[in-house]
Image 1 (cartoon, each protein chain N blue to C red):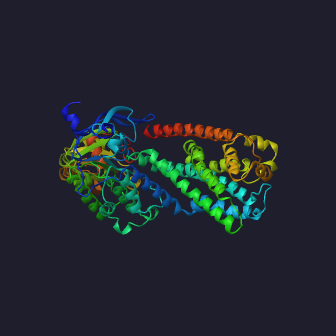
Image 2 (image 1 turned 60 degrees about the horizontal axis):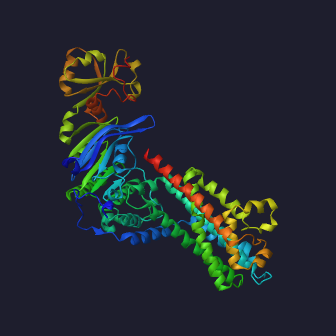
Image 3 (image 1 turned 90 degrees about the vertical axis):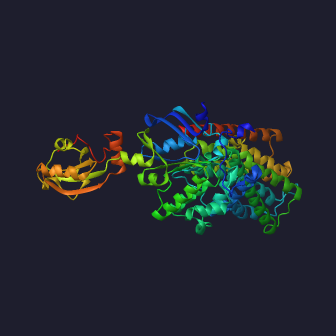
Length: 284
Length: 326
């Protein structure tokens, strides 16, 4: 790999105690482990982002548990999906938006540029952190639903739905990072809140969409979170139960996937442009 | 590239860097060979940090070119062999010292054992503290640990001892010398001549973004005027400038000596002289019958040395040689 080594005219002057690196897998594992440790130790982050959806589910989802929709789906299970979706959107936006912006503002990302770490490892670490934390949120919510609410889940549906919600980390990561790279670091927390609360509200995560004025339903058709929610509810219950739940199953699976991917790509492009702009600024 | 150039660990040719309209580095040529320990010495704002950032690839030059180990400095193969201790870089707050060092060590193709690095940075007793719990000096030592954990062949240190006390400084340079003994290359910036003298075998003096001198510490020191005399006198600047051995005369503003008001000493004004030897100059001043009060003689400071070495009329904040006469 000639491109990865310096010319032979410059032999290494290694220390006697030096040990060769653990390779890319060791690096990835360490990066993920350290990311998880860092945020597990920050109560304001862990409670605000990981635990809060469980608390909200306990407050607003549990009272509905035990009510059964026409085709047999527990309302508590449908609300598990609603708050799970809210949780993953908040997770992705706060981590990729707020935290990335903070590290950018403090100069840590710049410091990393002086090391040989490839930037994709850094982002992979963030993705893995979010996957782990979202899984923790979902397990916590499911435990509350089953133990305190007596919600009976169809295990296969729960697994499929949980799996889908966890992938929301990826689906909404670029929206967060686009905000991180285009908004002033100090304004990011405000902007993230201004984005994710309306998104959750308009997508039916807090209130059934059919109880909102029609104009909101129209707006919702353009939002990736709404389509992501429809995919997730669809995995938990049949269309009839979705209708009865208040978030009617509209549009095809393909449409939902296309809208989510379109937003992901557009935000990804914005992130790349913002990253390059940042790099040019720092080097200028 | 001639064979010598191909062996220079650092090869910078006519480097320029401006921030908008403000020039920071104006034509720096620099060759450093493997194993050298080089101090970049200069007052604040001389362009030291910008020069280091250009050599590190953290900034792109406005003009000129730089190679490190024969490649552009931001090349991943170069970054794998370079360690850097920068000023004011925050680390992830909730990690401990050990975790930080271990994490960064994983970024490099070769790494030193984490415990070894923590010990060398004199952080053993703080190893399980979180970054937020560290003092300024401890943070600076953590920054050193992070710089060396990749066992770099070239180490950049930007004002590495700024937050360290005397004892910690000595320990720090002992560790840095250990690195140099392995044949590694060290380049550090400082505005402390004594430190450059202590640690480096070559001193690059920069001011206003230019290399003013590039020599051994001993030769640089010999260029610096011996002493600074401050006094209240009735002799004029013009009269003093003609005295043999006087290199420069500056009129000091009142706020330089707030306890002494010129109005309370009619006919006297406060001057600062750069001289090679103070005794003959003072003898000449007394012999001419001038009044002299409140006399102090001190070693020339680096700032004053720059006035001398660069012929700079600068340092406008404190003195205005020949322009603000009373």
